[in-house]
Image 1: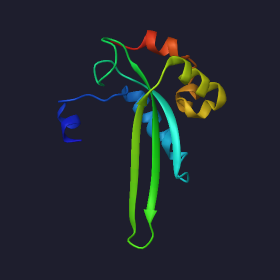
Image 2 (image 1 turned 45 degrees about the vertical axis):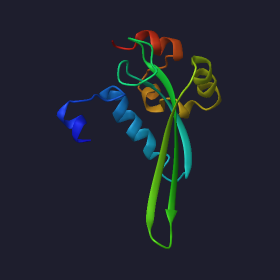
Image 3 (image 1 turned 120 degrees about the vertical axis):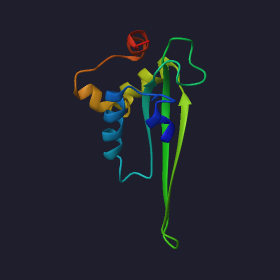
Image 4 (image 1 turned 30 degrees about the horizontal axis):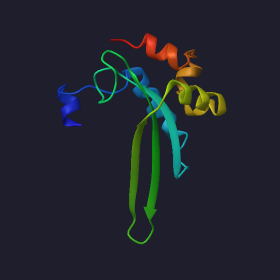
Length: 118
């Protein structure tokens, strides 16, 4: 977090998508396991083609040890194909940027990759 604050590294999402992603995660507060799909910014993640964003599935698992009171959150970020992103959006629109969609951003995976700021 300190490196983000100093500007040494950037966010993997745009500021607007980060805010929407955070707010979207609040709707899952009672789920122990959930997954969402995002597009990460170019140059900020390993494995993205140069100058292109990367479509990913974020898998979140939450647990609580009732004896110790220790809560744990595990997060995995997995690269996905445009086809998987679009299939997930068709099956469960709330898994793919739902607040951005509510704000009018209804782009599919290829449009997101094409329009990604450089």
